[in-house]
Image (tube, rainbow, N blue to C red; front, top):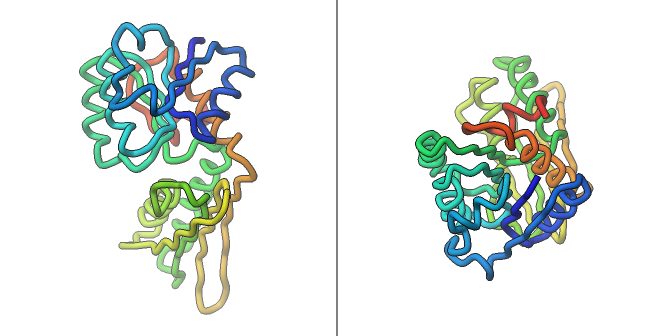
Length: 228
């Protein structure tokens, strides 16, 4: 499989390494080589089976427009752009392209989301207050993290809550820590996911690209991670 990786940050570099380890041909474009998605011309994009984006919120929308407009397949691990999700879905449908997006490509986080949903269902109307804390590296641009927002939405839906408060921390080079707490007058339950490195995110993104390489349509990683 021929893979184009957009973004040469810490996660983007690791995505390229993992893809190469899995036997794929890899080309990487950093931000300086692709201002305003200018490098993503139709002939250039056609040279790849899947494009994987780990850039920044201000760049990803332009990258998606350029790639998906060619009918290509794209995996997007960048967050902070979901207010434009409806536009992306429409473009995928019109151009018969392929898109997998997700706030977190770690399989462990996907399991956490399922467990959080069950916690919300079981503790609904039982007098528990839910809260979330998340910690990431100081260079992470979005706050709270997309994963924390997804976790909050899962709990709100399952427990019938209007809001779940989130505390966001930015410290050092932390790969990612998410803690969901349910507290009552009698006890406290805590569900935690701690990433020791970014490798889980990179492996999930590459596996999603492999899965998408034979498909079209728009998918949330939550919907397809068990199929990979």
